[in-house]
Length: 279
Image (cartoon, rainbow, N blue to C red; front, side):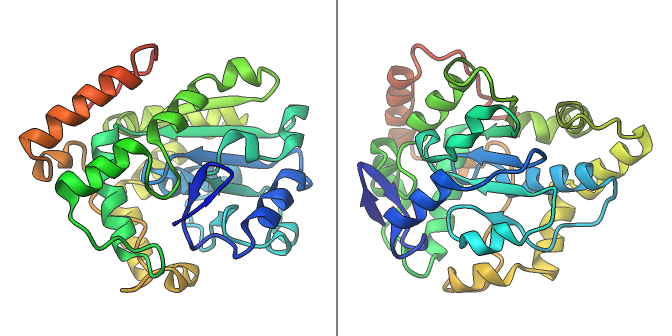
């Protein structure tokens, strides 16, 4: 993990992080671009597949996700439209041309107890940023402090909660992981409407089926993105894990939970966001 101007980034981001962030900030946008933003391990790649299928009116999986944080501008400049980008960087690092109001932005959130578990399992498998400590006490504490790759979950969700007020000109949709899991067809239709797609109900049903977590996970096992092979120390399929709501209960000690609840209560006191921590 490396810090740049007060924010923690994974080592897997570009070597010259300052130059890369400036290139992102100044990048040229197209009217039909879509940005999917989130704190890591919140369902970003999952919703990418949904957006990809909706934009193309088919149910074939995407074979190449565009990762704004780690790939060069040449990759993005040569990508066909409509382009879909994944990013976890702070709002103030995003392209300034977003303020022109032509590009759509989707943010997806997930309950932070499941996020910290998935985040821990992901970071353990990274080749360079790999964390070799224990989950209980050690990683939970680091997560609550924001001393992990991509910094504080609280800072991320709270700034994105305010995004419609700070950037009223930008078309924006906030989604929730737990809603996607429990009402996939309804949530996919919500995304379609936001994208301006009048997708046939039969196609929406097919997308909901193809983008079930189990089927999407299996597709990435069968067809992993080779980019992740350069990041991982034990195989290229490191994006999808279990996808369950409430798996944190298998990891947290009573002390972990009490500490987490206290920090959550303090940090989220003025937020209107509501998260489900179990079904």
